[in-house]
Length: 245
Ligand SMILES: Cc1cc2nc3c(=O)[nH]c(=O)nc-3n(C[C@H](O)[C@H](O)[C@H](O)COP(=O)(O)O)c2cc1C
Image (tube, rainbow, N blue to C red; front, top):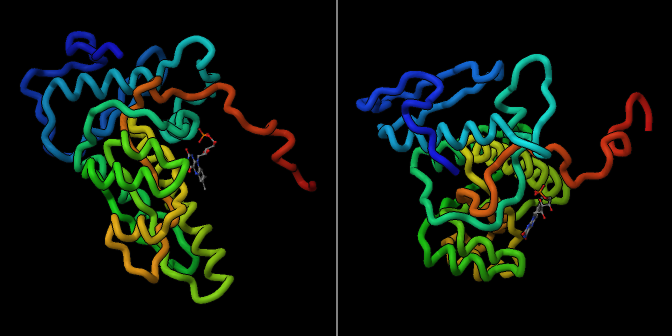
């Protein structure tokens, strides 16, 4: 990905631009609305340029990946929804604490049945822990190469109804996490957890809790996150029933 040079940035950037407050910046590019949410910690011009190039890649997809104009301008959330996909290979870049905080806060803000919030999140960025976590399930290999992972933890449910609602709620928290990460250009990759005792030991999770899933996080090594024109899904009209089945 070619970094956007300051002179090509869509709005004037100064060499001494260090952003210390969370600031929302919007700009019209080719009649499309681009928005950038700066992190709430000081960053330098190089990182601003890198973030802009990432955003431009997401906002201005090319060729077959091109999205259809809505006629109402591009909505940031809509782009993130269409760009999210499971990412299982990551660059060596680390994820800033500010970005990790935002991603986990997204999960924390998710709705839950009766606002019970029967979840805990364990954020891991230690390489040894990540390597160990990659062995807790046959589909967890990508966790070893992730910059970080979030373990989604549930308490042992008291009854079947709680088991169902807790899982539903955790799904909502998961999707909030995925979208918040995508919004930052960070890829996410699910993994189930098979070996519970091992996962609990790696993370220090109490015995009466379940390490339900792991979410690997990292900047995509394969291709940037861009809106996917034709996702691998059952046909929309087969899935969506209007008025009756
Ligand atoms: C509950 C759940 C468990 C999953 N477990 C794994 C897993 O163990 N390993 C893996 O590589 N992907 C896992 N995935 C990712 C799915 O395979 C993936 O979401 C699906 O193929 C759709 O692809 P997409 O996310 O790129 O659209 C899981 C997804 C969900 C929702």
